[in-house]
Length: 115
Length: 113
Image (cartoon, rainbow over all chains, first blue to last red; front, side):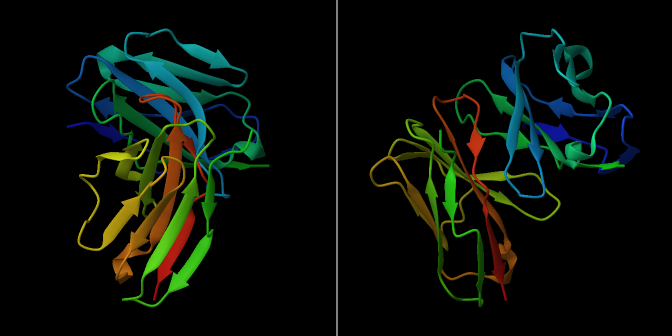
């Protein structure tokens, strides 16, 4: 069975600090996809990134970066120089490459950036 | 480009009453998903449609929940009768292709009293 664990329930940092959100996943599939979504107070889930299981290259997009390590089944998300607008709940998710295609979400990490 | 549209945004009903949620996916997206999100939890898939066909409804409590996507575009999710435990946010998402990134609507927050 697929499972995603986000051990950090809540994180609170001061603006401009760097922060890393952890994500550990379990799957028996050799091909799968990993995702990060942001859920601001408005409630809409905003897609941030999708990563194929065969692509272990780290990715950087502006202040956001992702570290995918198959050896530890982790897909961590780092925000550099955090801003108040980054405050939200962040979800890590996993989907298999074929079949159901459903997203299995972690429980989310509530990130609060204080001014 | 318009995103996924859901209505209503909020709904408050008495237990045992019926309720329906509507979703209009992004134009051209053939795959439509309904998710349930309980407070403090990640979303969980209820049902997935490929065009008009429900291809994964294994998590849908069929005794009280039903869904339809008659013309392969918009979709309706119904609960009849609602129970107190159904209070949650119901999210709709769509994707262009199976396995592609899913775009979510704002959700319908249901409160059952």
